[in-house]
Amino acid sequence: MSVGRAPGKLILCGEHAVVYGHPAIAIAVGLFTEVEVTPCRRVEAEGDDRLREALSALAPQGGRFSIRSELPMGAGMGSSASLAVAAVRALGSALTLEEELEQAMRAERVFHGSPSGLDAAVIARGGALRFQRGAPPAMTPLPPPSWTGVVLDTGVPGDTRAMVAQVARGAHGPLLAEIGSIADAIGDHLDNIGLLGPLLTHNHALLRALGVSTPHLDHLVGEALALGATGAKLCGAGGGGVALALHPDPAALRDALRARGHRAMLVRPPQERQ
Image (cartoon, one colour):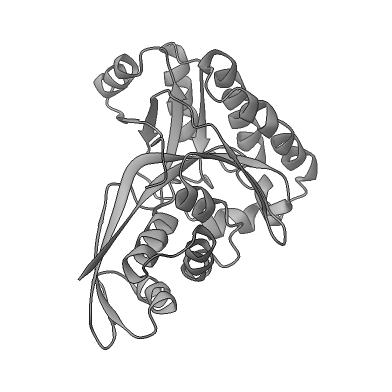
């Protein structure tokens, strides 16, 4: 038996825009997926056909996979990329970061078709990352922030493929460019929630104009701001999933949101690659 472990992630800026070559900023978060693999002549795992297809892309020789995850599925926190990286780590030994990422992308393509590679990159590297799609992609590690954030979960899974296809059908070039334009400002203020928060809120407004937010996500963002958050935004492809809020007292914000009937939890970026 071998075991692999990988964190989740949150995108602070760049959802959808990153698909079109604009920069994005993302952080790893301290919620983890753990994968155990034991020898087996075929791929066995509890889940749907797409999961087994993705695992087969990583383990054509077969394997029995046991998966445990702290991440909500389809919520914009990188559950599929976390699974892919954890499975690669369980299957391989002494892999370089580049090898981990290359292999994880085999599974990510099964899950998402033509992913940008951002999720797998920040999850494999840990910390914080500025990412810009290309051949090869430009990846600049950033100092990970020290704050604790509050994640608000709608409880409604998003569908990344569907949301990416929805954006592709529209004429959204200026909105996507504006999302990309604030990425570096966000990267410059990663550890200052007073400056970072309004940038996140502006990013949410752009994503709402893009058509990927939902009334539930907008309500959660509004509730967090009304309770004193310095900023809040949806994280991930949209259509459901989670939002992130920053607050000087994150535990107090979490408790206040829970008192109003919302699903809220604290997340903190792990400081090192794990």
